Amino acid sequence: MVEPLAEGSFFDALRPIEDETAIRAAAQNAIAAALARGAYTCRRDATIARRERFDSLDAFLARVSAVDPAREATIRDRRSVVEEAFLKAAAREADGQFGLVQPLRIHVLEPAAA
Image (cartoon, rainbow, N blue to C red):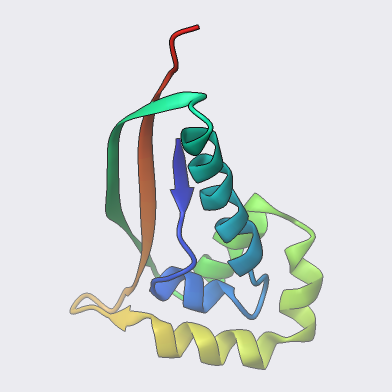
């Protein structure tokens, strides 16, 4: 299972569009609960940083809207707030692109023996 964490610069840039703090916590809690009740054995638990690069704010917005087109209305209504969050979170790279990092927690699970 791969789940994004509620942290990192990508998360910070996305938050004004859709704050996924609660849903990301719920996902981690569900995994922990399944492990606690013995439904699965965790073979590996690792966190990695996925780095994405964007030519512009509009490229970032196209990416996050492709995942959920309903976000377009929020982007339109909160454009200045979204732009400010993106520019604050993104690292400007030498080639002019904007870099954002999203930590992902990976659980390699195996069903418990019946």
